[in-house]
Length: 194
Ligand SMILES: [Zn+2]
Image (cartoon, rainbow, N blue to C red; front, side, top):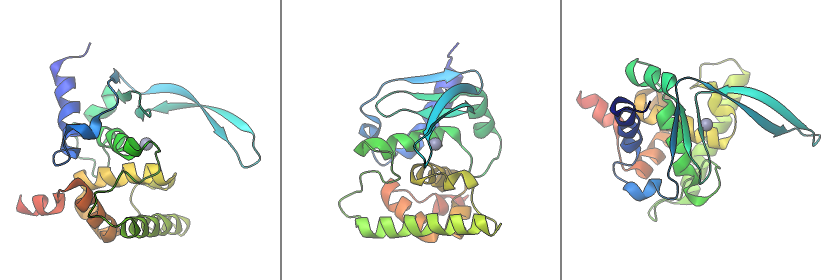
């Protein structure tokens, strides 16, 4: 049963991302589906040889292009009410929605006119490559899930940007600057004030 606690917990965190962007940033889709806990989905992946593999996965959240955002309430609660720096399923799934504003989930939302594409691409691809390298060398990194693909990288850095901006700044200051310009917010400055 969806109650106000569920509605407000999800809405407040989703709205944090669009505080300076306006509600239109979440236009083009309607539904948020909430399951009590993690949900199982069958996902198909294509390997390098062109073979389709079916996999049963347990998910805490999912975001469909032009479709719903799906969330596990148990995971939303864990991320919202406990201190898990860099982990927040609501921010993650709604970041995918922002990424998909220009249709494709490719780790690059439509940039503002004053943001050079080159600076964004360089900052993010450099950080993505560094992440892969550090993982190979077993060095400390942000959440390794970010290395899945550029779309997941974007969703994970957004989680850090709002919940652990100091860690994101430490690992990839250029990425922090790009997100600061895109979200028109500076969570690090906010954190220092507290
Ligand atoms: Zn994701």
